[in-house]
Image (cartoon, rainbow, N blue to C red; front, side, top):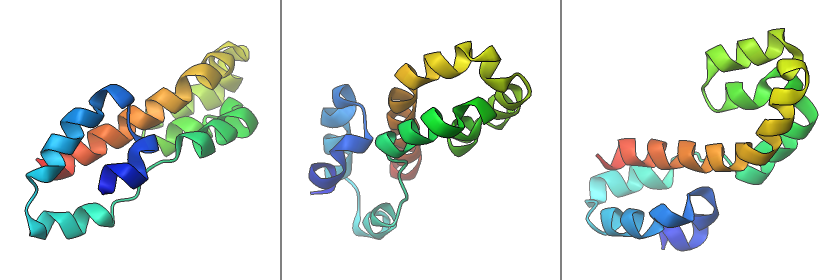
Length: 105
């Protein structure tokens, strides 16, 4: 049920592994997993389009150092910003996957 409603937040190639791991989660962790906040890849793409040159997208993915660097270089003079437009959704899905893996154990 969890992956059926939240599958867009994770990489597609990792969904079978997540499904198996979630089936083995006990009830005490299950409640915690349902309250876990995930980053929406589409929202992160929009933030990257409008505020990516300031590094806001990297700050949201807990990449503080890269966010500061992106802020100071104005998105790598626009090059880094442009590359992130294509990669930020995959980075958001990987971030969510790692976050869920940390809770599953």
